[in-house]
Length: 310
Figure 1 (tube, rainbow, N blue to C red):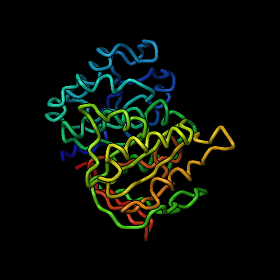
Figure 2 (tube, rainbow, N blue to C red):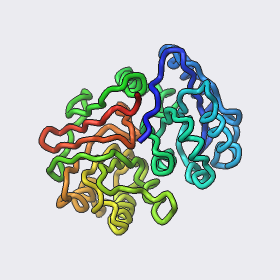
Figure 3 (cartoon, rainbow, N blue to C red):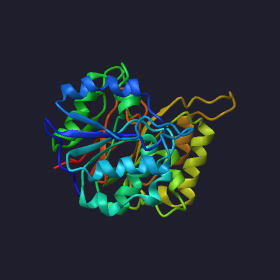
Figure 4 (cartoon, rainbow, N blue to C red):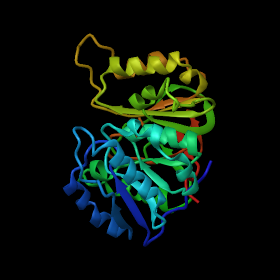
């Protein structure tokens, strides 16, 4: 795997919107935060475009992304928000361009499709972490989460998730016991399911699989896990990291709970499965590199992830 260079004070980051439109005022509010980090900001030319539920046409969104990748001044590409639309770009992305110009690529949610496609076609480590307008701009984004992001991108160091590392957060829940080591992959569950049957289908063999989602009730999560199970992805994985599933309460009293769904799919899993990680649509927010080696332990209740930058 190719590791991008870490960020340094004075570096420029590019901000683009490859999915749904971002609120421009939210983007502007984060400029003070980037100044604190001593980072310069460059926006994609079409960052303010709106095309239905997309942030401009496919051609505009793709052009902004390619321009940031090719721009030697830009050391990292941050995404404005998720929503929907990155999967529409996957077949037209210049993966050789990315391989020739490795740099930090940061986002999550709908960006999961890009993470998977880029890792499997460019061998570049990318980063599952907060987005500019939908996370960094919000008053709920806390100082410790910002520190973790700084550590992830500025320091070539391990990211270690320990139980109780966040105050007032429930402990991690062990669903299946074991120890596992493998490349950390995954992201948003609905986007992972949407890769199946495409040229960008998730490769989970021998890997630790991260899943998270938002606004999906238990039967929908069940359906997507069933897709991964029937396609062999769950059997191929060596461990499962269950991140945040925001707004997942059942709408019917007769529904299974989300915890019952996870128990059904993972209680007899052949490796460690732990839930409760603050990864996904949540604050605090623990960011991680995807594509590097990681270890997951049910005994110590820890996830240790190798550095994603050099």
